[in-house]
Image 1 (tube, rainbow, N blue to C red):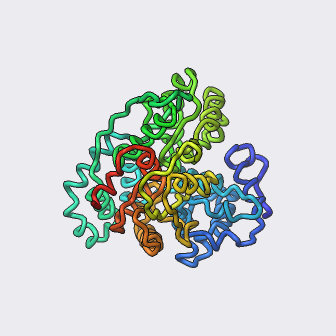
Image 2 (tube, rainbow, N blue to C red):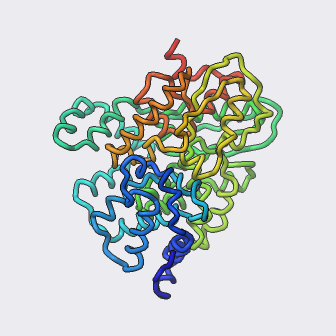
Image 3 (cartoon, one colour):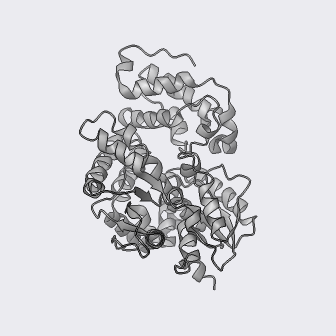
Length: 429
């Protein structure tokens, strides 16, 4: 695709990166078939191809974003299914991230929306604040119907999420290997997951200990920056990136074989640290090292270390977009579950997003609800005993819509190799 950026515009690193991505696009339209919002809405402007045109026009003209452009950019889930489909290798993630940051800097949103986004950005990345917000929301959840009737659906959705997901106070502890020691790994603490589902990291730590790895923690680590990065709040995101790098440096310098994450959305961002910090000399080298060390738990654990357990359940596996499209990890989770003795099935629309996407289910509730309902129906059609995924946002989104237990892949692997039965499955007995 031809571009018309000026030499002066291209001195900006973000614009230069976006210009390269735009020029790579041949406007073929293959991306439209796998874009959740285009499949749902049928509007070219809600497809990757259409958004590329909108972004190109906005950036080339250095224009103030119009409400129409903002609407279509906001509707993007950043699921990156388009990158998996694109035959030209367009780095769409660079474009959409730049567009969001540009909009955040140059567009003034309505007051309520600014306050909502500010509240999410200041609350969710901090474990203590998020836990307090969930508790408060749970107390106020009976008012959800009133807010919905008044047209404040996003507040109603947030209260409904709080009602269904009580806050926990996780212990961020280290744990030694329980079999002959093979090495040492750093397990990401993160922000939302340990408050919503602390059992995911507990199962992961036990599994890692069982296959011979000491698990170390960095208590000062909070949000990796993913949540605010995808909201376009680049200054907040980079601050979180720096804080994470600083929090992990001491442990990394003592030697770690990998940095393990259990939230696939975080993992996609961690693997991008080298790019995000490429222009900051004080952090660039350490950031690139973190990107090289970052591994999803299913990417790190070899199938040979998993022995079949006694429970041959039928597992419906939901691959998170950030894992299958953002990180190109597609076969490992299923291979591990099969090695553990489970029968694994996947839905026909496995490539499409469930609608969670970080804060998307709150900021775009109508679209998120439709995507969540469709995804859950496809999973329930598989008649499985349990639904497994690798991302806490997906788990929350799907669990709210089904009576089938929803667990993390690591919980099943931990159980199959000698750990406790997942809490969600205990509730079924």
